[in-house]
Image (cartoon, rainbow, N blue to C red):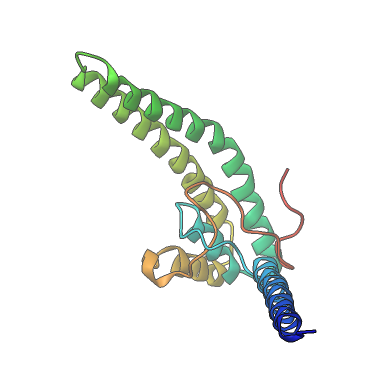
Length: 178
């Protein structure tokens, strides 16, 4: 009996099994690393309008930081309605471009209205932060001002994503907002 085809089949089977086991183990290792990285780091979405505001609060002592974060949470929640209306107005304006004939001035007017809504939401947040900062002792107020006045490129990356969302809760952040 010729055993050569059996030996070749045996080696091919061993090689295939090793390949499959290696692929599964490699997938598990990579999946575990991704999961560990995601659980230890904030999502890297790039800085959004609120990212610098959340980062600036980290310079404050724990009690002031919690109060600062609460002001941001409260104002962000209130501004969400305004920002949602702004986004909807912007989407509606862009949809008007599909009309024939296109109403250029109408689209421009609607986009200006959307920008105005967005700015009013941001202004409300900034106004309340000014009031909060005025209540801080001089040294804390100076630290906060230093962090808020940094150009965007000097600030750490992370959080935000274009919306006023708090960063993932850490030991200093307290419970997440509802």
